[in-house]
Length: 228
Image 1 (spheres, helix red, strand yellow):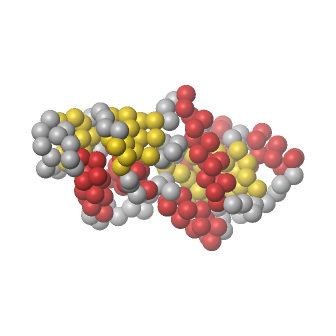
Image 2 (spheres, rainbow, N blue to C red):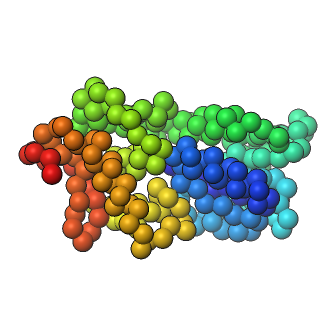
Image 3 (cartoon, rainbow, N blue to C red):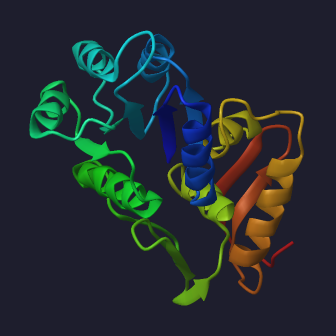
């Protein structure tokens, strides 16, 4: 899942970004309303965390403009304004949820998960491929009924591969969706993570699922034969 955080306070933005990354999300940040609006309108995000009090263009206007531009991405508004009228303004502007500052990060995570689950009409809360099952809500993985322990980033990588079954995804695509827009494409971190994920998912099974396509990228597909 790829999240955009629009927050002008660098410390607050850093805390939110770090917490989301630690929970397996790819995160981009914007420090102002105009920048956030253009990023949200030009790139695909699964959710937007949007501060109301921004220096150049307030979050309410950003939200209204995005809805006028046809952007349907779920939006969670963050603000220190806690009156009922303020919340009504945010929801009327097109926001899907409203969280007042200060807040516990666990609550932000829970509300974000709830927003993402509202898209279940578009996608299931579980992904399956062959005998691998990934539960997006509980964030658990099994293969042939056996639990597989993954780090947050390994989980995000597996999720991206399972959302693109049989399709070759490039290192650049993986970097953009599993890491963030500032990912260094020259880094070998993707190869390292794919290798670690492959060991956890494929080791001990006759059918390998995660494949390297030389010169192109990686692909999740069925293939009979011993593991390599």
